[in-house]
Amino acid sequence: MDAAQQRDLLAMLKALADEQRLTMIGLLHAQEFNVGDLAAALGLSEPTVSHHLSKLREVGLVNLRMAGNQRFYRTSDAGLKRFRQHVAEIEQPVAAAAARERDAWIDALDWDAADKKVLHDYTQQGKLIQIPSKDKKWNIILRWLATRFEAGVRYNEREVNAILTQVHPDYALLRRNLVDFGYMRRERGGGDYWLTDDQA
Image: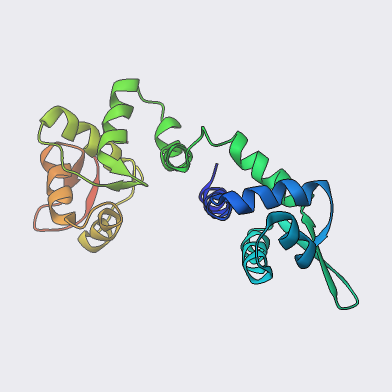
């Protein structure tokens, strides 16, 4: 279930969270009613019935048919089908669907499961959300950051910063650690940066 489906289901559930509206769905599924006849069947005032019908129509569970000046209501087959489909997928929460989509790039890497787990834990939607305190995990993050650069290409400091800023705002820390941990080299005197031979 994606986010749009979740919002649609939530709106339908809110509309149905009333005893009278649930009763209306049953009656309107069996036959067509106008407001007066439905009010008589339910023992409610016509304004109250009109209010409930408007809520059900808003979420697509009830259709309106005009016949001259008469208004007739009946359940929407398409709306009920949509509701049933949403309910059938309710065990697949939107958070899980989003997480699968968000982490697809990690699963596509040809890395072992332990290294992928570190990326799952410390990144979100391709961004670094936390700096690991242990060198072992930090090395995995730096190894991933190194994949954002092309082998054999020399980058000036501004270009390196631009690439790293897409991942984390502290680009200076990332840049320095890529060099300190041996993933990149820097030309003496503050010149270009490039991947080391091990990363190429």
